[in-house]
Image (tube, rainbow, N blue to C red; front, side):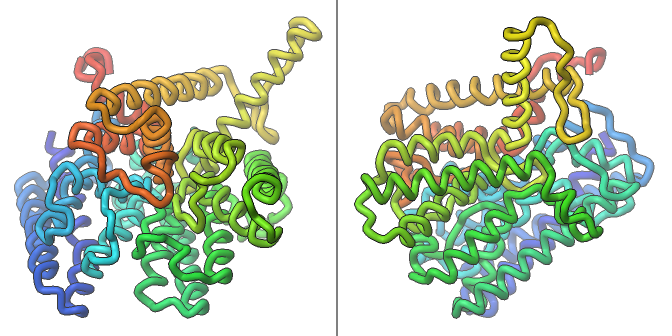
Length: 487
């Protein structure tokens, strides 16, 4: 128990430190109510964190988490972060309803980008920065950030960080996972800063550039404007953000492979190649459909809108430059499929992940070969790495749990009578894949504000479950989890 309390104490102090950024922003812009709100929440985090730390001091350098503690810490940390993060919304009056405020914060930390705010432009700048910052903090993982900033966690931190990292596996880029976490965050920070500079080169203000850089690299999609990226009316901004969304949806480990002088090895990566192929085929197919049936007369505009919407959906960023809910049915169905697939493993994107889709396709090919040629030896491998049966079982179980959660979530939010079938189905799909917009009532130019407290609570939990790869979240609800003789 002391280890858990000690962990939460340090986590609260970390939250307090990041709350200082919107506090400073409120001071710069003279926003009196937000100053008081952020100062109060920051002080409460520091006070609680320091009290817990000094009354339960314990050296964490040799701390070895048991499986139960690992799953419990990861799942509850994301819930606690969302609970703390929603308080400034309520205190400033930006989102007075606690259910809506919790939904917005969950959407931020999980980088979903779904919102209940109909007119985001009237909110204080400090609140909008906090909204963007929650996405950036959640993009690479709260626990991974914790490990990167607290190196005394050491190699024992690998298990706890792996429980929240997107993708089937976590590769060690250095001999200690702390080093891996630090290298991932260095790349994350460099790409975020680079994007901010590129956006300022497109005549965006420093404030808008920083906000959109934070939410783009996190594949979150929160914007400071109601009409998202379309607000800027700039092809330059559209293409820059399109490029960086593509990078954010790529496996970050490939950046280090390239940095180490092996660009060809990165290009030969099977997951990356499938990622590029899916995007290229989808962009071409949707652009063609827009020219033939979507009312587009300019091929350039069709390609630009198609490329942006395909990449923003597949990387689960959730920005918009066009109302794709008005596009031909073929285009909308293809975008729904991309919501399901998502980005690459070890990226900030959500969804099932390209690596799992790749393995599933290889499993299907193997079954077909067995049917055609008999019981032949046909191992499944990715590159030169053999995929063992245990991994195949885990991937199959994940996809099954994903589909079950999608069906159950759609059923639950339909109980109160809110939304139609398309709206509710795509809302849950969008939340579990951490995309943001869906179709119908939750389309790219609409919000989730019509849902009641019960529905937003369900969707909030679905977002957290999806961000934590489902099993990490759902395992704490198992009765076996609480049996010390079983876990």
